[in-house]
Length: 260
Image (cartoon, rainbow, N blue to C red):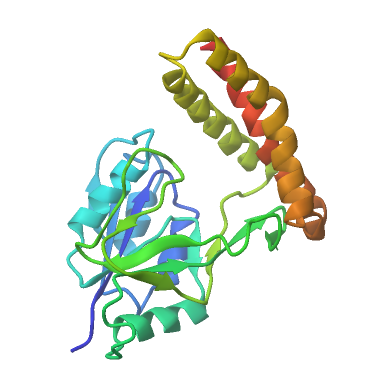
């Protein structure tokens, strides 16, 4: 009997990205589930055009709460959790169909799959700087995977054995550099809030060490680690910009914490 697949998403103002995402799973998904955070654009209308099961709720700071709501609404044998700015490549479509319907004893007991992801930035996919393969745990049997819902970069927790797929998920997170800066600013706001919580009950010595690391050691280390150790320079100008701003998140988030 053919295994069924639910594609689940949480969305907020994604009318421009969502069609390409859902078109990429046309013929692959038996069910599409969208939990929308009360979008002010036509995201919900776009989802309806693909026959999605839709729930409208609030747009929460930890977006994974809405993602988990979508996961809980799914009814198929397998769940593929996507973001609206992601596209399933043709190779990945074929691979997903193969593994979820395989009768082989080698894969029949596997409950989840890590998927390599290519990230588009300033006109190209970043292939170095630690950005590829950017494995993300998105495909798992229903009832076997959950999101902790505590952090924006957390992975699903899957019960039992997990393994890896070979074909990539394509990620288009930024329309342009201004869009990147807006999301980077929101991300550093969130980190600042997390720093505030982390340092709440710490003594003065711990806070001094944390400050020194955030303002000096961490940004320098991270830039050298991604740009030199992981060869971000091979991605040319986009690789430099990505490594630079990735490293600057540490001092900027700390300064925002001080303002809190």
